[in-house]
Length: 483
Ligand SMILES: *[C@@H]1O[C@H](CO)[C@@H](O)[C@H](O)[C@H]1NC(C)=O
Ligand SMILES: *[C@@H]1O[C@H](CO)[C@@H](O)[C@H](O)[C@H]1NC(C)=O
Ligand SMILES: *[C@@H]1O[C@H](CO)[C@@H](O)[C@H](O)[C@H]1NC(C)=O
Ligand SMILES: *[C@@H]1O[C@H](CO)[C@@H](O)[C@H](O)[C@H]1NC(C)=O
Ligand SMILES: *[C@@H]1O[C@H](CO)[C@@H](O)[C@H](O)[C@H]1NC(C)=O
Ligand SMILES: *[C@@H]1O[C@H](CO)[C@@H](O)[C@H](O)[C@H]1NC(C)=O
Ligand SMILES: *[C@@H]1O[C@H](CO)[C@@H](O)[C@H](O)[C@H]1NC(C)=O
Image 1 (cartoon, rainbow, N blue to C red):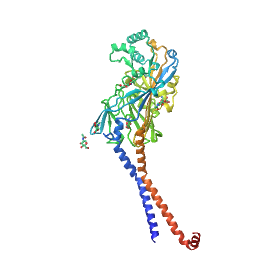
Image 2: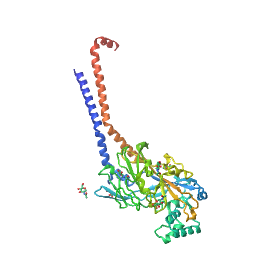
Image 3: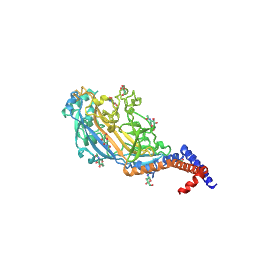
């Protein structure tokens, strides 16, 4: 009697535990509690880990430059295809702490500047030096040529001056000069007449130790999806705008911070001041970085597509209606009129025509796509690589004999890879958060397993209790004999 009561209780308990666990799984109580906690903790608030990581990101960021050295300048002037040789990497460690950090609007917003400092890393650079000579397009010269090509008098003056000083369409300068600036003889002359035009030229001129203006971001305390979302830049507060003077479209975060609880069907927006626009990226696949699960987000092909594929790119057709092919963005207006065109490295995902126009282009997905590997739970960027190429638009202008017989070209000058990978210490922190979250989420399943175990015990007891009743007489003596 006592025994069967025990069995009965076990059975009821198993059933109750199973029902409770199924209810827990279906209602997602633990999942929801965890999400609520994550949403509450991952906000920009003085003292939180998230704020500290945002204010002073611990993992090292590397900026690597690859230049295209022109091997056949005289042939190009005769109209032949340029033949370029890639040289690099030239690597700089990038330090970008937030400065002038101020909370505002009842701690729902925080403003900061983000000065970047670049320090050369010889060990990670080809030849351990930044004074390798590179022959490339003379960007100051083509800028002046494009600017004044419709003014016969000025173009004549400039062309004569260029001839007298032996300034041509191509120039040989060191990597350091091309990046950080050099005094250009043509610009120096123009500067005397037009002081607003700088005498110096460099692709990253004046970018060391300077910031690109004040950002105002949301802290995420109102809505977790707004974590670190930029709402104002250089005093402009529209969320989403485009004007030809300022040439910017703000939408998204600064590419180092993402909101937590990212899902696969989400589109993430990143603001990039050097690309003069926001980019977006969509889920590609699941990856693991230093043992941390992550979702890889990449900009879909449409980001750079021509307007027949992506009408949103009409803003890059300047002047209006003048559109370049897929894979190219005319950013001339944000580069003081320099005929600069951005693309992916080696014209990855651009129209085949641009790849074929230059000998030495070998686009491939692995090396040339922009990637962001984000831990979905915390929104932490565990690995990222932003890859962009700077090209110069070159064409034959009759008034400038320096342009010779050159074909109309999108000439690759340099590409960069700005990359980051989570440091060991931060990786351990993220791993422990992910581990704890997994334990919490699996509590209902642990309970369910316990219920199943009870059920099994119940069935075993039940069988044992039933079996002997009918077979007691026959088996009894046998069992006794064998024991
Ligand atoms: C954060 O708190 C510390 C110590 O309380 C204080 O010194 C610092 O100024 C605060 N930072 C901001 C941005 O308010
Ligand atoms: C700031 O928040 C407090 C508490 O939530 C509230 O009482 C106060 O009215 C808010 N102030 C402003 C300016 O929104
Ligand atoms: C940038 O500035 C820092 C600090 O002044 C300096 O140490 C570093 O060498 C500079 N980098 C370049 C590339 O000039
Ligand atoms: C700007 O970002 C929001 C979400 O952050 C998105 O819904 C919207 O479509 C974006 N707009 C553009 C033009 O990219
Ligand atoms: C736009 O791109 C698509 C796909 O690459 C191509 O088929 C189409 O001809 C292009 N349209 C224009 C106007 O260049
Ligand atoms: C790029 O845009 C500028 C104006 O912003 C325009 O003058 C130039 O022709 C464009 N370049 C090309 C190659 O379309
Ligand atoms: C950056 O990308 C280039 C190719 O674009 C690759 O060779 C290089 O290894 C990458 N750098 C890092 C640190 O991953």
